[in-house]
Length: 303
Image (cartoon, rainbow, N blue to C red; front, side, top):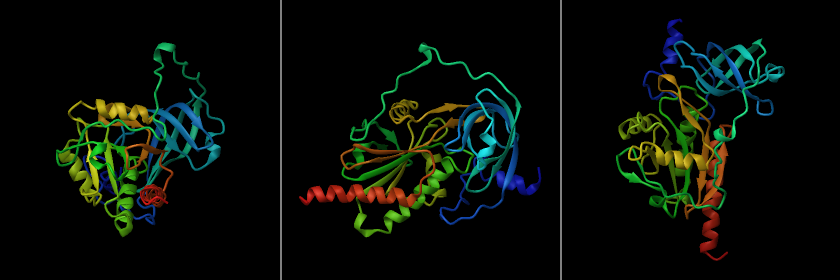
């Protein structure tokens, strides 16, 4: 691996907090790096141009794990089926990652279906449901719960600070940095909103780690808290995640395989919306939050 590639990888791993990641939405792709990938297809979503692969270790970048990958060429998914052994090329820029090439080495049997004992029925939160008022600990070591911010519109998402891919946790944090700036620039929304980033890696993401992580994104901690769950060893995060259909699982090397959830909550602590995946823009979330604020103001004013 050349020196330039090594420098770029250090932006994503090795304990760096990615302070060089710009939050500007007009940032261009730079420093493209590619890695060979080999694994087994778990699921194919042609509509979303996604394929979930249980892949082997990617030397110098990522331990073996199961995760979804984006493709830009729909033809790469045309012949794929669950159970296929594949080889490909993972492309990573500062802002996104995708499979630039993918081919089938051998056709395989689809993974066996789950038995009844393997299936856990999830009780998902629905819009209008009050979210459980679970306690967390923020970057300053203070206990925080949803009721702490009663009367304000909340937006929160989930990350872990060691996440290496630019379009997963890194994108969520960059988006929230942009959201904070946009909200602060609107005087009509003063003191009517709050942001929260919740870690599902409480063993590593201590308050001290989260504070440094937040600083790397230029966070103003008066309106953006970074939360962890050391008091229950992550059980409160699990309870909240289960209701939002957020899934995460430990992998080798301290990495975590996970999906993405961003959540909007009204002034009374009731769920308004769960945004899946990463195909949303900060401006869209800001407009949704503004709508929630204005709806409550209309009720208060009797309009």
